[in-house]
Image (tube, rainbow, N blue to C red; front, side, top):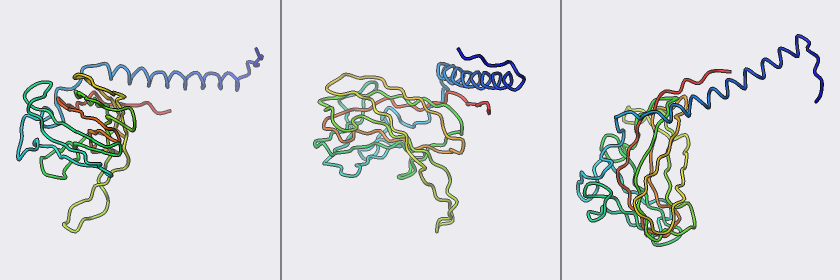
Length: 226
């Protein structure tokens, strides 16, 4: 081991490195502790069990085929459910297909911005069932978009919104499987005011069902500065 003289400057460097290490460990412990605590009782996803239907589509949801939809079919299924009577079914017949359901907030088509708090941990949970889901492509995934108010004024006098980026969670579930619960935890950006959530079967052949979706606040993350 190399001998380091115990000069004042070397002792200061060692103490500084140790303090930085302690702070990093503290941040990791803090985040893990918050993630293990009980979630808030308010579900930010409206009609997450798909029991309310209007014109064949669940209220507060958008059915959306992505780029290169490949004949994807999205529909209500009143014969299959985890709880209640309904679920949403996505059938993708070709490898380049993509079917998505998008959570709305106010129930108006296109209003898919869910208010969130900056620097805050959230838990997104849902149940999913699959049939003949192949192992190619992205598969069953969740895309969470980070959004904020745009500074540009719209012609109607309002403010525009834009997505800054997406975080993608891939379940890795394939084949045929019964109802399985999935939970993804994430922390919002310091500037983030909204999120967009897409539930997909993407670039995979197969059929999946979604049910009992929830988004709940875990807690505020007050990260120490160093």
